[in-house]
Image 1 (cartoon, chains in turn brown, orange):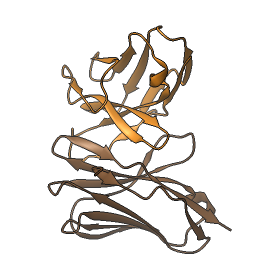
Image 2 (cartoon, one colour; image 1 turned 45 degrees about the vertical axis):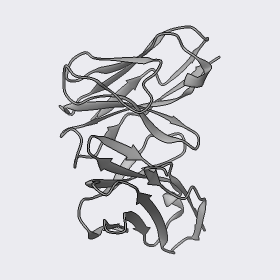
Image 3 (cartoon, helix red, strand yellow; image 1 turned 135 degrees about the horizontal axis):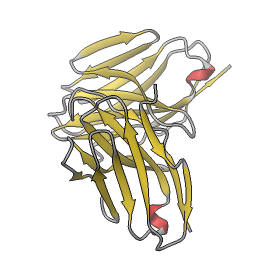
Image 4 (cartoon, chains in turn orange, cyan; image 1 turned 180 degrees about the vertical axis):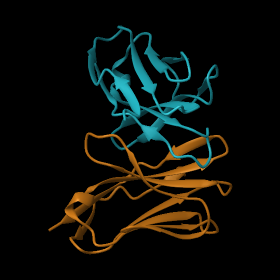
Length: 109
Length: 114
């Protein structure tokens, strides 16, 4: 079992819809969780961080964390074509940050 | 505001050649990291430096060496390049070490080994 798992996609949603991206992790003691966006040929950029159970909202983005079920998700409301990218989930546990392989999101007009 | 700067941006090497990838950050961060990214593999940690003067192995350290030259600079060296080291290399830094501080990434170095 991979430490951090994401569906590779692509996840295709129409413009204006809600995109839901999911991530599961294996280590129950994981403490901090991050979502990065990576455009093709570019470096990852941080879009959300979450540290406690529940929801955290920032503009059109909402991160959700459920430590009991060991999953973290990212919702993107009113999806735009400019949101088309690969979204990387990253989980910190003990002494290192582990990245998932990413979910490719495609938003079509 | 430069953030994390990596040089070079592109490089082609022949098998057996050596080279050093440079990374510098201007955010006064304590911790710095080197990752490689391959298709379908995500970001894999090669080496990291939690603070000036310390370095530790990550997930895939074989074939690489690092030097934390000072607080700003963290270099990655390939002593004898192999085709399996063809990848995109990212340097990152964070202020608070591992934990609740996110990492800031450089633009990457695209390295091809022939």
